[in-house]
Length: 314
Image (cartoon, rainbow, N blue to C red; front, top):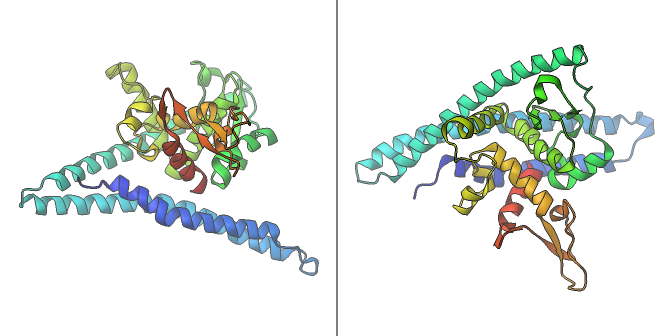
């Protein structure tokens, strides 16, 4: 079976991009620990932080560009190779390459459509804010940051996130929470929903407008064309062997993390100590036990740990 370009991209994430990001995090910690030289007016710390910020922004832009360039080049090369090896009677490579080409085209369409949707809703947001139809955006509280930190670590732009809690005019007529870029609309507040929506913020950081179009069309598909399809249900794809990274619906990705947050546990090695079943317990790192995520009688602990590793190290 030929390996898809998306699977290869996942390996690039694990072997190249994630180690670089961890190195940046180490530099950031070094800046925190570096003592302030008063005789330099603390300019040494300022310079250190400026370097970290520049590197982080450069890495963010480079990561997005590399993903698109890598997938495009990979797909084109695989199509050519597939045509060549087809002569020998092997059609697997070409079939996989055509699937990759279709996926790439869909992602480009999602990105273009998502940008249009984002622009339209941003205009509505500005107008409603101007006329005080919706609440003023607020930043994440200390409590919310502490809740999100074990899940995302440094990979989430906490300072850029704005929350609109409560009715937001026509934007929340459906009564459902949703995210546009770094703005999260929560008609009804819950920490579990906040985790779900922050996954969308993370998707925006590392994938641009693609997640907006992806979410819109998967939900439209379930409402109009494929009534049996559930865009939030991650189990069929995971059970079929897909990783969290390759789930085709961004809503399924976000729902998976929300479910891990709500139902995951931390199992202490000492049998006398009861398991920690509180929300977010799965994301605890402690040598006194291990985390677990089980739905029904099926364990999804490995998939959850793989997803968590990607979330916190990009």
